[in-house]
Image (cartoon, rainbow, N blue to C red):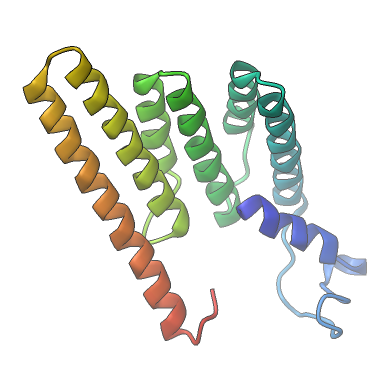
Length: 181
């Protein structure tokens, strides 16, 4: 999602770094600096590469590509943190597909470090964390470990509920601002 927003920003830059042409009037908003723009562009390209690998059935290749993204040198900016949080969420989902619950959980935890406060990205990471715990509960139940499976299921439900709570805060904040993000 952040990558799409960044793509829109990159496409709206006019001469001198202004956003002329986006709304028909010259914007006085502070432009995003070149290192941030470069990071966002590279992130978008890496997500496209991962898409192509996934479409070809190469989930391991998609994981390696997204690992490149989250390990890239990154300038400090809110947009960069959002892209990294989103990248970690996608990595966790791919690792979950591969049955790598430990790796998926690790990615969720790293992603949460980039998603502070009530944001869509934090809510999504919590949701993915809930899916990881749900899968863990299933694996534990299949292994005959009923007590541990029950604990994992309880943790999954708590994470999913926390995800809903965060997303409700995001929605409430947007509605309080007249629907503006």
